[in-house]
Length: 404
Image (cartoon, rainbow, N blue to C red; front, side, top):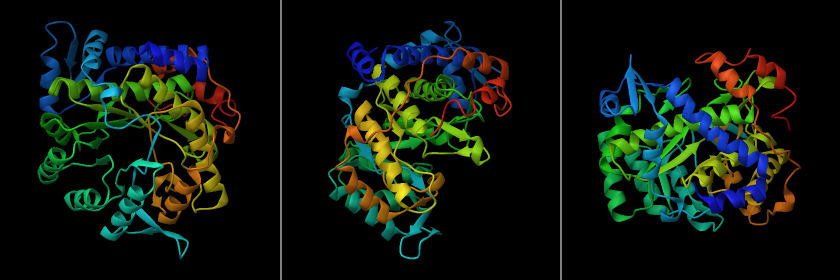
């Protein structure tokens, strides 16, 4: 625990909210110990089996149960924020949209090209407010995309690796510039390893490249409809990835990129990234991780608008202001993305990043800091690996939390 950060978080968020975050960490440890994470990847399974004899893990029926002492041991070997190459209060272009938004025609769904990636990287390089970038959009060839990003942006990058070819290229880049991270969403709800990426994750961790570990449980779908409930599920999933990485390669840099999300019942339980409460939820995730001295990257400043409307820009300003007022380490998606993070607007990237230069804490809306709700863990114990749409806590909280 970083006691200095606890004091700072208390000042910014209030004692009861920091107390909630500390309980979230304990709840996540309970989830890992009592519910475990499903996994079929043989190398990862074998790693945890090695700790059964010491009572630190149990592997049963392709499910890994992690004891609290093992998690603590793994967290102690993760390099802290002061040893990380990205400072606090850093906005990243971030994310991976499948499509480009045609700003002239006013429509989305355009297939990205290398020229689009080049333009995004050049904008990221040219704007002081932008501290680094993820891919922004996805090209089919990961190595080609890496090369374009490296050539046009000297700032910290996070990229994807899903093949031996792209891993080899990432290792070459890492040798020449140490400021890259490899992004993985290792788990998928409910508490299962995403086997599409588990083999690549193991190889990247073995190679020693910094791991940007994401997870995205949704309150009301795969997690309780409460602040501490969805934070606990998100935290548990990322902690599993961090522990796996530390067992594969002790001391490897891990970035907690947990991305707690809200399923909005007003839009058929789809995610709503434009909610004030969505931004606050991710800021709270960031604070818990800073308290644990974990490099951390969350989501804020996005929108639910399908087009770059005045509301879309206002959503971005609102999210950026909340981050500036309450503090954060790294934030992705704050400039260019549109509804559901599907379309990436280069015009919005330019305009929103320019607007962000003048955003101040005074631009924040009023927020009510949450306290710990014990019903969330009751919900997890009751629902287990099921869906939370009809959970009593969801129906009780609709319209009372996660509001505009």
